[in-house]
Image (cartoon, rainbow over all chains, first blue to last red; front, top):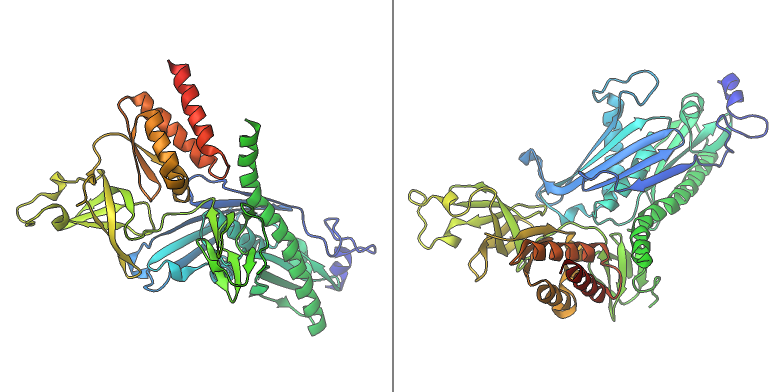
Length: 246
Length: 230
């Protein structure tokens, strides 16, 4: 481990993809990219490319799954066969089922499910290209798609990972750092309510290291949140400028 | 009682709008004495309340709403109607026929699958799907005209303050216009050109719903297009 870790961060504190330890990958977000879905969003974060689509609230099929007191939130996280270097079978793997659950549970607290009993909200997160940290990116882009669909939310949810690589606490792990590094801490966060909706840890950290990792992950979330807001607002500004030009 | 944005400013879900003795209007929610946004839209501060005009939303049924629906299914004692909402609506045969007998009356002769109807919601709650009626004058099957679909949150803009916009649209285009609260609008004119003009005007209202002086601009647009056609 220590041999490969030596290569992950060089003597100047620069990571394999040229970032500093507390630097996020460059991110591009857009909303309303699919016309057939009620809401949609697209994300590019470094080499990650993820599409999210939302349908609903709508009637539940099959009927017997409907809940009498609240809406049913269903989530499908899926990786395209071409999303990784070696072809991935399109059938849902154990990992994808787990991430579907994790993403659903990270977004459930923000939606007013109790206002729409007997309906379902269906969320699809399709990973077109994966390069580490797709669960966090999936949550960030899914929350934008929900806002685009006009589903009432308590707050936007934004996610970011931190971890320990080459003995240092770093922000926003990429694929190599995730696999070779010592620990990975994905965090999903509601910035206005100051509440965490997802917190996982894979690997070994001391309590001090964990606290530092959590702090910088939340800081990363706040930076991404600013971009999320900007993306939603850009939709409206485009229309307004069009009118003023007339 | 501080407020944190200017009137008509754009807010995203989760933004803190106001603190203190305000009541939470549409598309907002209250936690303690703080009011937050729950949808993307333009904030509207009133005397004692805060609300948001959402940029994008779906129709949620409410009792008394006039809606335009499409017959989705003909059942034994009524119809299932798609009203473009999270719930499908029901229309009972006994609402249309005075003495309804399933053995004798063929419901598909009254409304068939695909027919559009204008109806009013008479009951709706958390436990039951909306129930429609076509008993009031003017309600029932739609036989002529064209349908336009817009975001339901922009319906109030199409109607305008005290109906100013809709009155203007009717007089300027010469069309009969019926606005369904679920975002569907029926435009019925003498000539197809009139209908097309009215539809263009409605789309313009939808796109520019959040700008001021809209009624005047739409009037101008209709008049200039009228002038160009003649």
